[in-house]
Image 1 (cartoon, rainbow, N blue to C red):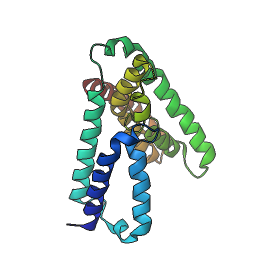
Image 2 (cartoon, one colour):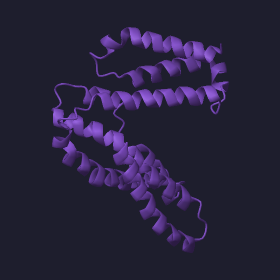
Image 3 (tube, rainbow, N blue to C red):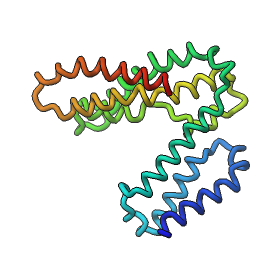
Image 4 (cartoon, rainbow, N blue to C red):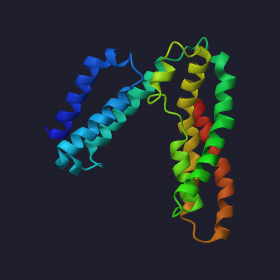
Length: 202
């Protein structure tokens, strides 16, 4: 077996053995694996030569994504979800667009070599909430149940909503002639509609 996968499965095993102790701290599993990945990278630079587009990497990524989504869904209380639906709607309809707008502005100021649309791409990638990374919040009993449920629901839907914006900004970033930008208005509305449908269905 490839050394990359041996190390990967070893880290997962170690994380599983100490996961209960880790839960007592603010540190989350993604943080631990990120730090472990940096240590392994500097200790074994040859592992950086692994082909990212390989089928094995894609399979592992798909499994990880499925487990994260399943884990998020298992923490949702169906009976109490409707009490936080208005808060989740505000997070998606107001909070997320404002995050993209302000994120774009900050990216333009910090990275002056980026165009407006490239800055928007960066903002829309960073704007969706990830309940996996925020596990310490959504699983903390001291946080009100209504807030935790709202964050969990929002984190599950925002990816589907942000995808149309991402595709739109990528397309606009590739447009050379300004007059061609107007043809994307209809596609924007269409993609946002698809995003809402996919997000709600998921």
